[in-house]
Amino acid sequence: MRQVRLAHIPFAVSLIGFGTASLHHLWRSSSRQRLMSTAVDEGVTHFDTAPLYGYGLAEYELGRFLRGRANLTVATKFGLAPPVEDLQGGLSVRLAKLMGLVVPRWSQPRSEWDRDLADSRLAESLSRLGRREIDLLLLHEPDVRVADLDSMAEWLERAQTSGRIRAWGVAGERTRCEEVVRAGSAVASVLQVGVLPVGSDVEPIRCGGRRPQFTYGHFRGAQIGGTAELAIRTAQAIRRADGGVVLVSSRSVDRFRQLARSFVAKDGTT
Image 1: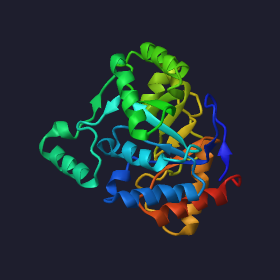
Image 2: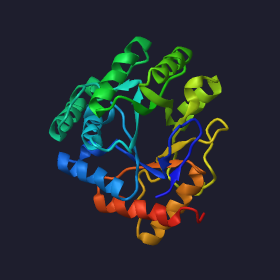
Image 3: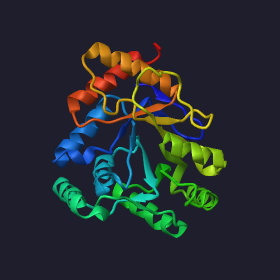
Image 4: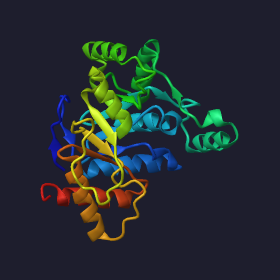
């Protein structure tokens, strides 16, 4: 799989990255580890996670997987915290989600834009991931009406200087990211933008006039039929990403393998 170089990122990234937002849906740790191992076998070198995913389980599971794999790059996030933290088993995550149906606060993420919390939250992510440095730290769905973006930019610069992160940016749905871009804040060095699934619009994605380095959601909710349809949708996703990385995820080893190989086959042909 081709490695790409992106603006404001001092390392190469695989054409597709593996997103861990649904990793906790797999019951067993062995299944989660096998899925991520399949991603690496298919050429993926970049993994995207967040403390919010699976109440912390995604970071823990990815941290286990990263042991002895220093060549892989990782993006995690700050700003949205799970209502219940540090659940490390599939059953406990499911119980927490069921509780959320009864007690709403158990299902709602907590917004944490207090700069004083940033150092401790970064330290927690580093611990869960088993790393001394995060390759890419993204502000998770920041609200320009609440977050002090200038203050956060200063903190991100210090975190980079101290060797705790290599690059930073913003992650979220396109409208939220566009607000940050329009605000002119330095936090938007890297953009990771959610997009609508591939439909009739296959033009390159832009966010506030900029090309996002990462996009996700291209296959969200899509019921893809055979190999031919997958090839068409893959080519469209590559065109929309316009040289950037496409984040994808799956709960199925076979399905992910098929998707990854479709990207390799279509890369450079659109």
